[in-house]
Image 1 (cartoon, protein in one colour):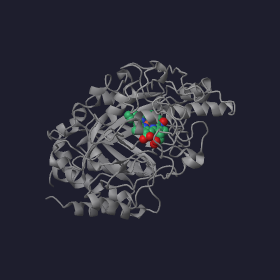
Image 2 (cartoon, helix red, strand yellow):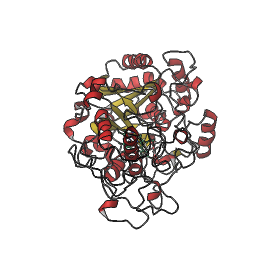
Image 3 (cartoon, helix red, strand yellow):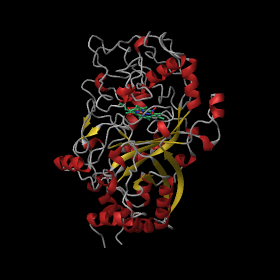
Image 4 (cartoon, helix red, strand yellow):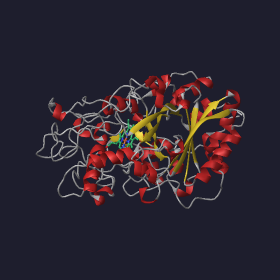
Length: 507
Ligand code: N7H
């Protein structure tokens, strides 16, 4: 017998591991990041456009605010048993968006689930969801689209055993582990672990900053029907991220509505190498110390300072007050009165990571198709003294660190894969609205943070101009990759009603 969605939501609260009402949020809340809408604001915004926030899994619209998050990848070994356990035991644990917006409705551990195409196949679900990247799997994109060197891939991602992933998020790892045990007990006999990756916000003042030290997650788009837009924030249709919603033009099976494609990437960060590169190539502004000149180079490669202040508004000196103010810290678009956007790199370099991955007004009209919601979290420990001293990342696997990258979109070829292939890995395809200056000195270059210079080859030199504000035509050669892809997979994160009515078997 199938229960209504409403009764499942009641059951979801009842079945959470600890019944106490939360007094502290399971999410982090650094000042620089946009606040989530309150439950009332979201209820009113979603009602206006008919978005059902109790049906959409919680991770999709929330962004990069998790404190601890475990990615538990699994193989389905008994599909019939799994489908029955999914409906009776797991669905009540799944956390919808609405539940995360107020502390007292948050569960002890937020639980989300997503399936690879292989996972759907294992369950006997053969509908075409309308996304070839998802259907073919990330391994199909590995070298030619993403530029990854396949030998660096974690074997689990290169194999065929990843059918799905649980995303378990809380404020303590003990909570996450307790919920994982609960999930494994429920799914006893139907799944095995394929791989797992524990993510966590960095400690102390570094909370919200990724391992290179930069505040991350400031500039996710505002989604109509969910968020209240901040100055400079692009407002986008929900259908860019949620299947079947306004703005999604692809034909999908009706049960896929309110689901989203999740692109997962384990991106290792070579932090000691990055830091050494900045010191060795520090800029030479006479008003700055050597350390500040190294910081300046890093900021210009990223397009933001470590504080989060955008280089487009603070080109040579950090501005922590601007950085911490969401009313200002995303309010830029690379245009400046009296400057030609096609050649001006005195403000923000063309190659800066944030400009490569979201060109804003460089595109005319401003791009509305190629966007993602980033929802990842750092993984791995802090850099050790020995690594700092040697300027080399340890080869000890327990010391690997990086970003457990998560991007949500309704079309992976327009979203994550497009950003990586067409913008980050591509030295010169920006469709600038002004006549493009084809001098090599004004070439954008490949993204100095995530771009790869060769298809399937690591450490191919990248040659961006614009990094030195005192001589924007100067090219600084980067001979190594600071981000190394360890692989990933594409998943579909279904709505709660799809889990109930299509993926589960009635009890
Ligand atoms: Fe990036 N970083 O922490 O260093 N990213 N990113 N990213 N990224 C951004 O604005 C980072 C990666 C985007 O709208 C910031 O929130 C790192 C991939 C997009 O202005 C920082 C890695 C892709 C934006 C980082 C990594 C993107 C963005 C500035 C890998 C897509 C918004 C903070 C280890 C293919 C741009 C902020 C905008 C911003 C970091 C990966 C995309 C600090 C370390 C793979 C769209």
